[in-house]
Image (cartoon, rainbow, N blue to C red; front, top):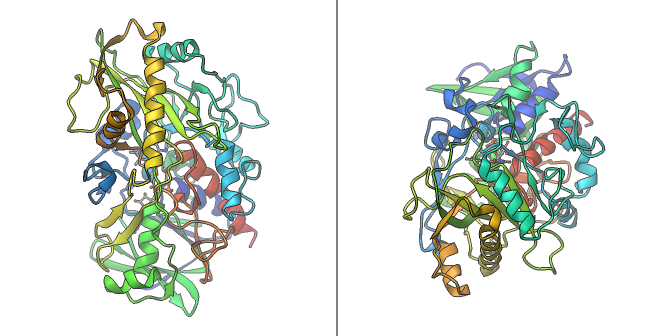
Length: 511
Ligand SMILES: Cc1cc2nc3c(=O)[nH]c(=O)nc-3n(C[C@H](O)[C@H](O)[C@H](O)COP(=O)(O)OP(=O)(O)OC[C@H]3O[C@@H](n4cnc5c(N)ncnc54)[C@H](O)[C@@H]3O)c2cc1C
């Protein structure tokens, strides 16, 4: 073991949230910050190229987890990509930048996350982003000075333009600013793409300040477990190759290892459901039953069309326009996202058009009722996790997607898409009744990889962190990433994680 190093703050995981926190906390010169990341400091060449993001799955920047067989999806094992790099998942993701609809955050408050409504989060959303010069962005709701430059597609794909016309023809509303979180409509997504290149959290927040003398970054470093003195978390043990290190935090340790990684670290440190910890050989320290439960994600399906002519290659992220709909008027907000995808995306084993011979009208579940778990296989840090998202175990999730499939079929048959439209390849024209469509949803499943909720914020016994993001029952320890969401938001999760981390920086500085 190397001699213990001492810092004011230790931030574990340099993904979306970790890059924000390390950059914000080290703005104060006398505060020493350590940032620990399992992935490499060197970006892969393909990370910069927006259209190449699918090729990053299975690379060394992907932890490449897999689900346990999913009973709601015919026993399939679902690949679960997850970033392992400076920038974390923001370095391999699909670059869509959307806030959830405001109803998502108002639901957090109802779930006990006091102070986390849309209006209260708005300053933090704005602090992270910079939309200077982007038309149609209202400075009351959108940031103009943050580190993260975002904008809609600069060279839109012709299918994206045709889709928005189709949406209009199918009588759906269109909004100029779909990212704001205020609209239940269709529009251009803002994207984390600048000058044709990906802008990840490391490039936006961390790399510009990485030379600060009070900021220490260690990469290729796997956090093994937290250390304690009584009820106080004192720091972290981590490994770089065979070498063991330990670091001490005089103020606080913050977990930003993502919804799977932060729950894993808590459990490896003896904080979690006592019975499970004993089963896998971890000595329980604190019985916090909620750790690793409440796992939520956005699974998707869609209608795949053969195109009547070759589809030109994307200069963007393959998904530039989207919309939110409510599948049941009784809901208090939208629950399904519809998107044009310029490739015929589908579950890997399903037959369908060649990559440049089709497109997909995607239907993604934004407010799942199903809840999953993440558990340890054993007490060894870095070992594969047991991830059971329990996709579609609540039948209401499947029904919402069936409603979405019917809606995109209406959009898909409009005049605006006639010049592109060939046969419906999936599910196929003969798949019409509810029963057949339900079966299709369970067969053609993929995931957005938006794992959330495993260390949920709240005040009840099942909550893992309080509304100040402090782990309940422990001093000097917070979680500040996608895991703290009480319920997953009705949008791709990255923008929300930026806001959570911006807010966490304020909470830490105010202590
Ligand atoms: C393939 C893919 C596509 C996506 N597409 C989009 C999209 O288009 N738009 C969108 O909004 N969202 C998207 N997301 C989701 C979004 O990127 C994530 O929600 C967000 O990045 C999560 O941020 P985080 O800080 O919680 O975790 P992450 O960004 O995942 O960061 C966690 C970091 O912690 C590190 N870590 C974990 N365990 C340890 C350990 N023990 N020791 C040291 N380091 C550790 C990891 O290596 C990682 O770098 C996508 C995600 C994926 C994987």
